[in-house]
Image: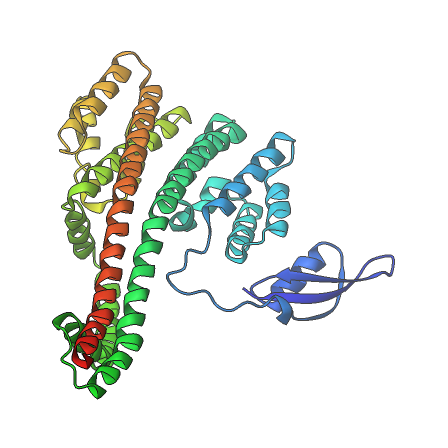
Length: 402
């Protein structure tokens, strides 16, 4: 939605200029006229018009959504009604896409819908866990408390994602730097040395000939490679929309040796933490199970949990049903069984999530500590190879001159 620059007149004759985000100029006019202003002029605010976002860009960031919920909880606890709270928060929101969604939700609430019902059409942006938590808060009459518990949940998930990204950042930078260094040496430095050596009639060493041939081959095949990469990306983007392709890719991810365990433990942690939040918010086990299963990021593992609600309806226990999924560990099922027997299921599910979050962090730290020396050794060998390719011909030339 674009911003509109509106020139307004108040009842006492003062003139105001305000920028407002709306789907059309008519909606903008109705908004200000509903507040008692006389609209003198409306035109697009080109200063606030931004470039369109890319299709794959994540438009609502975790930190923006967490900030929105923090402000909403503060306003609700201060006694503000939901509609007024949404109006105040959407007016201050800096994320344009979040601002658009909040204005649509505000319009739905103004038309008489419940807050949870207004968020349902945007579950892809905010997740079903959030709408379920809102519904539970409305039913229990403690919406600020329920949103506060969801905030604790969202902060843990966001913190875990941030730790994984930061842990992988350093190895990624080293690998990219090594590849750039190799590309510069092979494409720009060695070809110049080749002409210099040819003037002396010296026979280039095998290492140098191989690298020069590689550089020549890469330069000639670069257009073909670029076209192939573009076609591959387009094909993968189209195929990833199909459910069976996503299942096959997620199943393939589980075959990667070291990361298999991280993905399995992530699935256990997210399922347990989500179900714990829902039960604590007042949602019973059976309605909460499908939502908790959808919190599992791997679709192949999610498919293994489809039988759980039917098992519970038939009188089975949650721990036994989770044990039959094939990826819940004995430790997790034993802890959940203890929670069932002690009538503290949500507390034990939270403990399971904490245990596996710690395990995931330990595995990531171990991976980073192991990959760093491997990358350093790789870069050392690469530099040594480059030096040999450059200096061996110089030694040959010296011998020829003697």
